[in-house]
Length: 163
Image 1: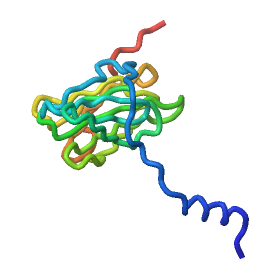
Image 2 (image 1 turned 180 degrees about the vertical axis):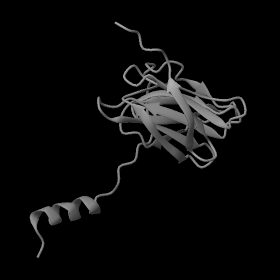
Image 3 (image 1 turned 90 degrees about the vertical axis):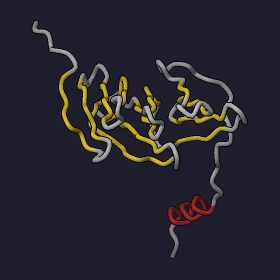
Image 4 (image 1 turned 180 degrees about the horizontal axis):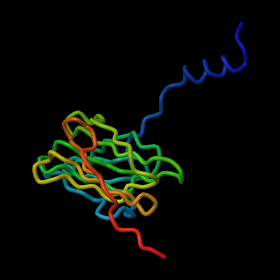
């Protein structure tokens, strides 16, 4: 026998998925948030909790969906293989970093250690490591191995002052 909750879930499951087709505008609140991919054809920028990849020749937009709150920073690897995006979340929660495979547009890794906000991200010159800086409530800097998707080392970004 179907309960009202089961019936409601069945109705939701049968609904057609609503897909985002395009966006108009650029928020511009993320520092250094407008990036040109090394292929020089695609512009990448955050819009809320989505990353937009826009083809500058055709104006076609693609969307990378995976964050559950606003994107606070992004970077592109030097070879263009990866896009990394960090987010801000609520007090007491961990903030995600998603490393995206540029070719497939799929998540390559989800890195979670920082609290509340990812302030900035940067790849090393060889793209072997990703460095992440946590926000004010976290204060840590972490070096991630891109091959193993694991943290290599970390430290406080600043010394705590006494008094």
